[in-house]
Length: 464
Image (tube, rainbow, N blue to C red):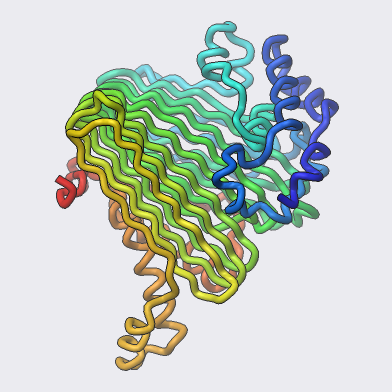
């Protein structure tokens, strides 16, 4: 790939010294950073040779990124209510705001600096198993991790908890690597919204944003993660999200990709508990030279588990998209129902997308299906709208927005399409979305369905 020749020069050990000093790294973490740097220099961006042909990271060069630099804090919005935890990541660091009501209920939140200063056992639990990073971007994000937190929601806290997580890129050559760990206790309800923006400050080169999220979902918990990816067009981003879903627990990943230059996202969900359920829903809109590379892996090991992965992308100009989904059903995962759907719409001759669904089935007592397509906009639908007085460009826009809205309507969030629509309209009109100086932005208050305020959250009955 084009970026391979310059990748070893993106960061050096001197960059890590600044990060270590800023966070006062213990010795074990300093060694871990150096090992990640070594792996970064050796690994390819795409470790699987089957997918290297599809890699769309041409033109990425992060030479000059600065993971140790600081700067002033950007304005933050006010928490929506007493059940909201606000997490702000910017040039100044990570700021956490927890209401007294949540604190008194036993909800705990600790920043990266607090975790680093705590017991070594707590740090190791936060960082997870000491497995070597599988690819270059994972190694880079681990080497320069400089923001993050851990949140624990206690068992049987039935009031919905919202974690409003906002990252704002505001410096030239900025590099933010945010690591998050969230435990949802038994029978709890959590909504995590992860939003990424940039200020209008010129970037003067590419910037790097890395997001790592580890979820531990106890029995009967319900967790929804909504991502809104809206940085400037010089942002190179890497997402790595993992979760183990316990008995009777429900998880939904919802991701809306609208910004950035080049973005890679990796979702890995293990359905280990009986009756566990996951929805992985992703939408992308790419124009100009944008590229998206999404990989979803759902592993079924428990009985009576349900999995669903739906990805839809719309691409125009010279944008690129790659969507790959893998469902693996282990031998003991009886009565599993799983489904992969990957579809893309191309609006120009220069746009390209590849969809690659895979099923690995080791158990007979299952139902697993997939569907995929890559095609231009249907001319018959355009003709139908034109025959009713809709101009050609408006007709194509209506069809494309409806194509993406299919995913948003399936998300277990009430009024999600209405919340995202203004962002999509801005991108369609080629208007950039910047974090405002007064901080009055971000996703509004959202309700998870399956509660008293919204309809029941159900798995698609058509798959039964």
